[in-house]
Picture (cartoon, rainbow, N blue to C red):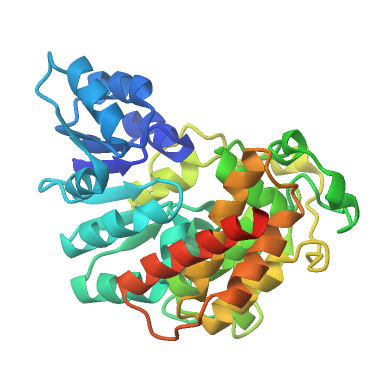
Length: 380
Ligand code: MG
């Protein structure tokens, strides 16, 4: 039986992780939430974890009272998240929180020798070199949950030690596929929040609409698989059946397919190297008739070029890009900026913050803050 921690248990990935628990042999020993203590209480009573961490201090006090009749410990703030992430009996930590807030708990979990089922791509975007180096030193596994990175990982199981020569990172293209930059000046929040294939949280859905999600994933893939950004091609695949592919030296391409449902990559990360029956039905290819592939429109989606720039530069530029994007997406969700301003603000922050080639954790946190401040100063 595996003991697991779920950071971000009330979000989309956290809920789907809980949904597959009965398909795998796992016990949840700690969970963390941001503010949703109503769902946290339900989950605590259902799963009986030893620890529930609530990031928001006030909400933590409320939950403590709600769970007073149990022996579940409620902890709070970043210290609480770290306590959950390093729970002594835990074998693997599912990092399903959204954004940069996942960095410190992930590093703490690695230091404590836990394997990481990584759904929090921002951690690698901001601090890939630090996280991967520490994971190597500690000898722990980083098991990708992101569907594309899980696909690459699954394809590599058939590599027999051969190095991949290219990654074909597939992208749905989101709701604005085929639109010009000019047409995207007039899109609404409702349109941006309506993803054609995947049901996800608000932040990643907006990132998919701007294609920043694919940019973040390019950087995530670069760190996870130690490849140059130029060896990663983004391929728009509207049906989201091929979740990504790898190419080898002889030109052979191996792809992984499945229905667009996150429960499959989550389950594989938790049962690897074993495969167990899963709730997601297999793909019915004859019913699909055709699968389509397109080159991305980098002119209409400038986020892709920004991500390539951050990937090539490494250093603190990933943290700057990510921090600016998180701030800009939040402003868009609050109806304070139009959609097309998101990549513009990210670019302006990337141009403005001082570039640092070698980074420590403190530099990542500072670059993230600096990027957010620039975005806020630009819209005042
Ligand atoms: Mg993905």
